[in-house]
Length: 230
Image (cartoon, rainbow, N blue to C red; front, side, top):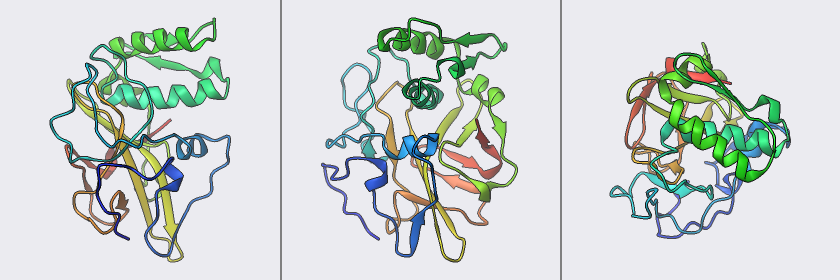
């Protein structure tokens, strides 16, 4: 599978992005986080813009751009984007009491009524200012077996700064081999985007689950033992 690189993205949602031969997406209920992620809309324009409207200098990292708003402040960076997607899913499911994040001192930030989109975005901007990769790494649960990777999982290195990317989708072939897709925001705050696989043009944007412990993305790298789950 080779998807030609153009300035326009022909795929409207994550689940429309094609798979390599012999792979099928793992099962996900429509009401699950995995099911919701697969239906996140994508922009036709593949340009990644910063929070202030300027194009990002590096336009080679993205396969497609998520149609998710970016605040006009330098917020919604890497871990913030992960929290935004998780919170958007819970908001869509009206699971308001589950929208909960903690800062590095374990202070809790819970979403409260009114359950409007305006109040939701005000809450998220507060979370973005108080939480980050270090705190999110504490909040999430370690995944001991990387081969169990699921949509919604997070590759994260907590730090000041650290980095975090979210697993948007996972597929498997008949022999049990798995592949996965990643999305990120970065610094400064910018559009959330699907990452290309810089090591495999033929399968990009899919990454392979294999014995290689290092996952190299266009602008950062992780180890398999940095995978975490909600």
